[in-house]
Image (tube, rainbow, N blue to C red; front, side, top):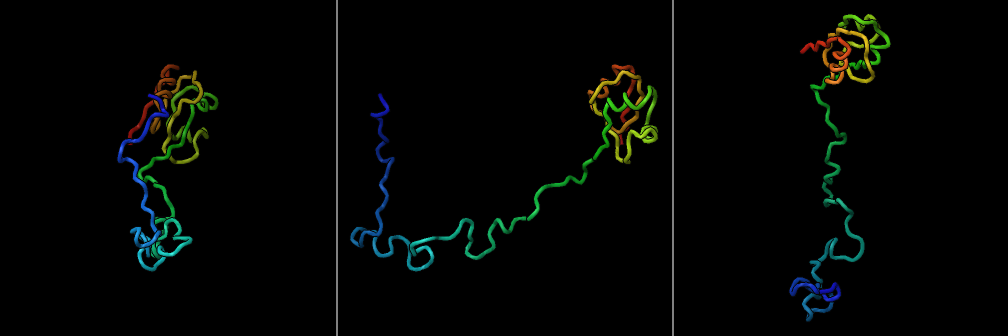
Length: 148
């Protein structure tokens, strides 16, 4: 079997009906377009999305999309490198971090594992990544996550 010997299955390809070739041919007079109206005439039809004067679907959609989660918690982020640079080893909670200018807002605090830590810290925070907790514990410190 070769590609040039292949043919389509019998009955799978039907020739289209030739309209506008006279009434005796079965598709004359209006040639399947109905009588009068926009579609019966030759030339340009309706534009894409036109709904006969009704406000189109695209116009009825809300103008601004998106979704804002009302329960989202935005954290103020602290990296391990910031702790290592700006603080001495010791115990720190939110008030102490604010006093040392590590944090500036009143948002909950989250510790992330960017950088390395070699000092022994005891931290009380709202959240921390697993990698950050592991890094602090590896240096001999502890991270206490307070659940609210």
